[in-house]
Figure 1 (cartoon, rainbow, N blue to C red):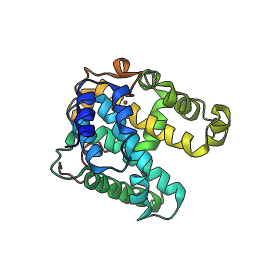
Figure 2 (figure 1 turned 135 degrees about the vertical axis):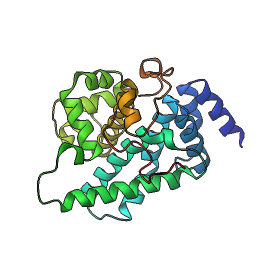
Figure 3 (figure 1 turned 180 degrees about the vertical axis):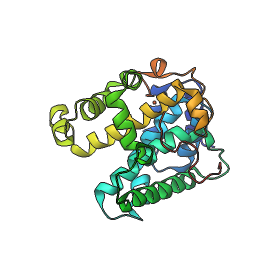
Figure 4 (figure 1 turned 135 degrees about the horizontal axis):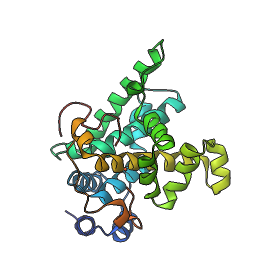
Length: 247
C-alpha cells in the first residue's frame, strides 16, 4: 500500500474529511485502490467513507460509462446513474472486499438498467414500489418531515440544489442559473445529495433497513458530526447487493 493510501485510511478512521479530501485530490478519481479503501471504510460504517465513495464514483464517470454501455438515451443514463448511486450508498454494507468495488458497482448498474427497461416496457401505471430509487427518494423528500430533517443535515453544497429540485420543484436549468453553477454540476449534486439522504433515512430507520437486506449502520459518525467534511442519508430502493450476493 502506498503512503498516500495509508494516510487516506488513517484519515477515514479519524473521520477527518478535510485530510481525506486533500489526499484524494492527489489521486485520480478512477484509481481502483483508493476506491477500494473508500468502499471498505463505508462497508464498515463510515459515513465519511460513504460520502467520499459516492462523490468519487460520480466524479470518475464510472457509473455513466457502465450505463452507457447498455443505453443510448442520455436521460435514461442519468436516471440509471442516479438509481445506481442510491443503491451503492444504501447497499454498501453488503460489500465484503473479496472483489474489486468496480466489479460490484458494475453489477449494481447492470441491475438498475434491467429495472429501467422493465419500467419502460410497462403499459400500465406502476405502483410506488416499482418506481426507481431516484424517483422514490425525490418523492419522499417532498412529502415527509423525517426526510426533510435528513436533507437539512446535508452540507449546503448538496442541500441547496436538492431543496430547490425536490421541495420547490424547480427545473435544473433554473437551479443552475440561480446557483451560478453549470447544468451538469447541478444534476450531479442533486444525484449525490439524494443518495446521501437515502443513507441517512436507512440509518434513522434500522428496522426497515434490516428488512431490506442491510444491517443497521454504525451511527457514531452521523451527518451532524461530519457536516463540515462529509455528508450523510432509507431508500426504498434495492439496498442489498442487487446481484443477491455479497462481494
